[in-house]
Length: 176
Image 1: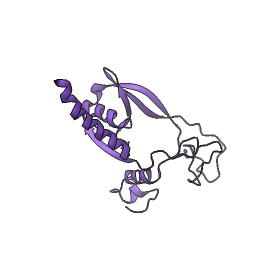
Image 2: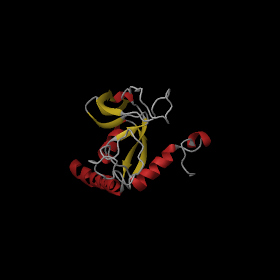
Image 3: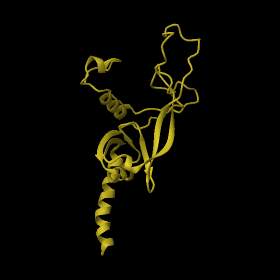
Image 4: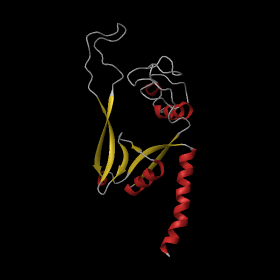
């Protein structure tokens, strides 16, 4: 894949930013907002920009796994891997009798103040918007068939394999 630039998708529409995201996540992971706030682009990614922050990498060595299926498939993905992100941006974290338990990303409205950096476009909006995450529910029937993805590492894949082996060995014994 070519070097990443701000306009990579307009230069070559066949290149998706997702390929870079997956590579960077696997190689470097990411740190929490207490270390580097989500509202700034860090000058140095090897240390926290916030004095009280904790430089702890999350999801380093993880890979993205894609799935497609019906509600039973989504439930199995949740059991084996944890939260699943659906391509419309919704994260499914669980379910009850009739609903998915979801988390949705919602931008927080930004008020543009009159004092701005001289290098910024005075008429433009900021590129980095703060977000909040809203817990909610959606009817299971909302998604008859859906595509989404989860993040996993070697341990997660091993746990899923052991769960499958246990199910294959235990279920026949329970049916006796």
